[in-house]
Image (cartoon, rainbow, N blue to C red):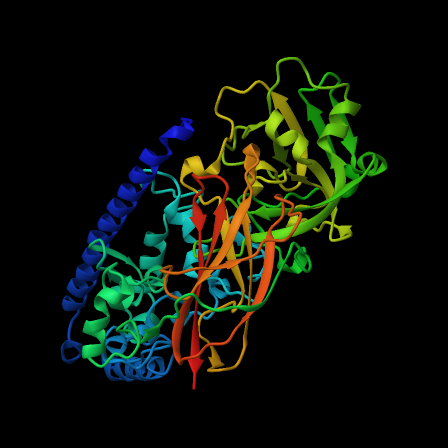
Length: 536
């Protein structure tokens, strides 16, 4: 059902309520799981009851495995404050052994990947921009989207069953003292059970409420906490940035493109590849050579995945492409058929956007003239298979699923009112703020030495001509913001790439947050945060 734009406030409230409900349900489910594990452990026979003469050897092997696990990262039986200060509270919550990346430096290592992983989760490449895969890169697709707490999430299975099952059947995880709170954390702000990987970037960890820092400063200082949070986190108000530069430079190369497929990879030789135009006055099918012989247009556009990861996400790129405009193809086919008002693209893999197996319609008037094209090159080179080559659909200003990889068909037809208006209507983010440096949590710098900060920001123009209105940086959980000037003569269909230097004046662990404003007052923001440790 298509929502009216005026319903966004009600939808946001419903979305928040749904989110709270899901977390509450998850709280009960996880608690039940923990109790089940304890109950099962209580049912196991004691070693002294075993008649098997090999029980001693088994016990020795188990003890050896436990001893070995004690030295592994993320061992919950160790006390570790991690990147936070060594305060009593940070140690008490075992902050250094919480979250996915405490054990897995990069979740890419545990994901089946590459185009030989048929039928599995097909993520092709390691993380871009020097990043690593985190929990937040998975949840938009597998838990946060879907509306109303749908168990299928955005376009994949609900994450909890596989995560719980694989961990509580994993001997190393259990030997390391792993339990529910290796991943979860109580969200004192709303009484639910949340995820450490999300909450560690909020004032909830440490402060336990949303009160302004000045309201709790007396309590903190009176108990010996010289910083602003009981975890040892430090804040800097109105953070001062020097040497600020903003550009719209493209991504360095195709190596930094996010690449995955919801379907299986097509296996079609270039010589057999065709693209058919339907819903035009003279339907035509083009070979690759015929497309290459047509007038070519070059442009640079920002592409972002509709399920770009939480916490900013790195599924975003500014890509120079070359190909044939849809307007040129329509003209070559004698114009559009009478009555059509939407279009959609279909890939050789069968993908046609989130309405698959049906076509996902987009407005002709609002997208066709924005530079929509069939791209035949990117970064001055042929497009490889993993990136959707030899030809993929480009829809500047929109979310990536409006186009498709391995394009084989473009359909124009009469819509039924379900065409994509704004992915914000589905509760999905329409702005992205991605850190390039620092690119991962826990990097260490020194007091008084300039630190290079850089990032990219983009607000989808979508079909209504919105654009990026502001880019901001905070070092106090969003209480104060420092603006990043936008480039002159900015192209709204491209990201803003910025860099600056920051010279920290005090030691401690800081949470740096980047935020992007859109001229769309209903835009859903996807802020990016990163933890950085400043040493004396």
